[in-house]
Image 1 (cartoon, rainbow, N blue to C red):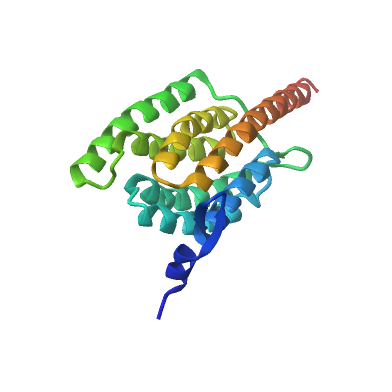
Image 2: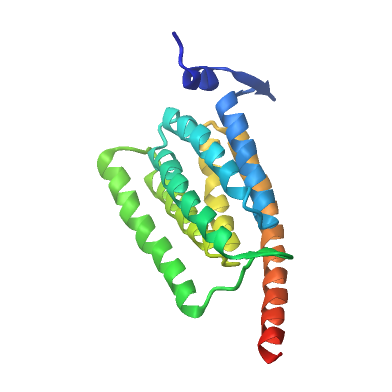
Length: 215
């Protein structure tokens, strides 16, 4: 008897001659919804992210993309942290409180990307867990760094996502996941808008805080 996972991966729709499994379709649409929700700084971002994580884990595991598959497990853990962190930094008008990263935090983000990518790429190569270890590792580490920064309400998390998308699109195409690649392109446009929105909100919230201190 086929399991639900096997059915989701083995069935789907065909778009422009490309077969898209239900798992990939629903998972990527949930991931796309997460970007919209994150722009609006709502707690609903995280439960939708959990749904996307479960489905995309099955998709990437079946495509032999070890880094992308394991990434989903880590995203699930970070999503729990993000949910908790956002609930503690809520604002009645602007949703979650956001801000620009400090100089030290920016160095931490860059260092985590560089060191984490190198270490994980070497691990994937040693385990023969991916046919494209370096881009796979970049996406894996970049995603974790982006979600961590998102959980902390840092505007720069959108820029990390943009860097992840730049590598994710060609990797998805090379893996035969054309629908996912198209979703990544849409992500890029939404990420740019999200960065602009959070940047504006951060300035407004900073100004409000400054006025409150003076008062």
